[in-house]
Image 1 (cartoon, protein in one colour):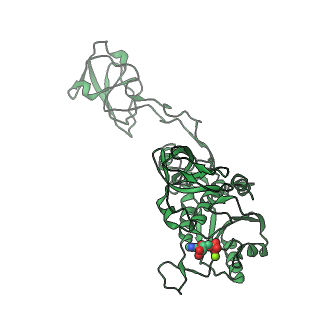
Image 2: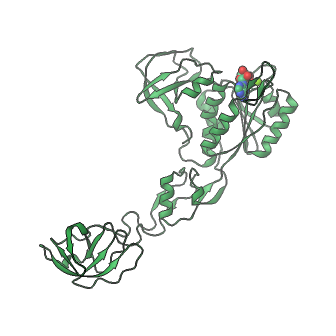
Image 3: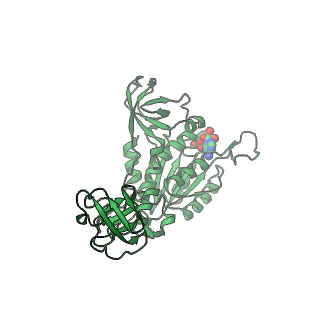
Length: 397
Ligand code: AMP
Ligand code: MG
């Protein structure tokens, strides 16, 4: 059976970023920058005062200070005239430094009336002045392509006078759950029916990762209904995620339906736990992930394979979730052969596996904030030993 790394490499193989689009800055949060952000002009563009005070030419004052007549004002947004030699100009935070001035003296350090200002010492040249280009020189590259834009980076783009940014298009992702037993949460159903609980979680993961989720109505286990639903999903999206029906039971008809529609199977089954029956196929540029229906299996496999696929389609530079190391608070025992992803609570540098690791358990996923990665070769990890951990927060960063 394929191991985790080989399967992930196959999912990411040949994926190129989606098409590009230009969006207004206010819509660019969470989008992925497709072109480097370059300073078109120096930042700041002109010398300005960092404080309220008086602009002077430092050479006009003796070392022990002195009195200068006050002429002119520079406030933020104004365009002051030249500083007359032997005078001081009133200046406020953000005000352009008048030509001829090379220092700003804080108003707290000056005694003044309307016409004169008394200085106690000669200021050092450059005091309290933010110089043109201090922060960035013109032409400097500030952010590279492949950055998922956070609010602070949007602020930087705005200060560089960008009104729009070129970003990658958000990939459309259809989510289709299959199973005769499924009913909408909150609806009444026949005995034996259960609320469909994976679709909403998967759609939210797609959204958080930067894709556009299309949550399709669940289908029964009938092959013709499943095929029709898949055709519809393939019209909507470049990535189709199904859930359920990919194991080896009589009702596991999803793989057959994919193949009937011309999908090429890339793999079926991976040596992981949970999620062994995972399916991956391709139809032209479209990619299909068949997740097992058990909630922990569906959610873990989508996190480990679907989210990296979305990152690659979005052109995000960091493809894989960052892993950290933590100390186990209690031992984990397993049958070797499959890489295990234990649902766990990470607190500082300590990590505790949750009690119910069954693939059908929805509680463990909801209470966990991390996955512990246990090697397929290990049969036991001792309490106190370091283990590899994937924090949930890293999954869709
Ligand atoms: P399957 O992968 O179709 O064999 O389903 C495995 C288990 O997961 C069964 O107990 C199903 O009832 C359950 N299951 C499948 N799909 C879902 C779903 N969308 N929501 C909740 N449970 C599901
Ligand atoms: Mg099923």
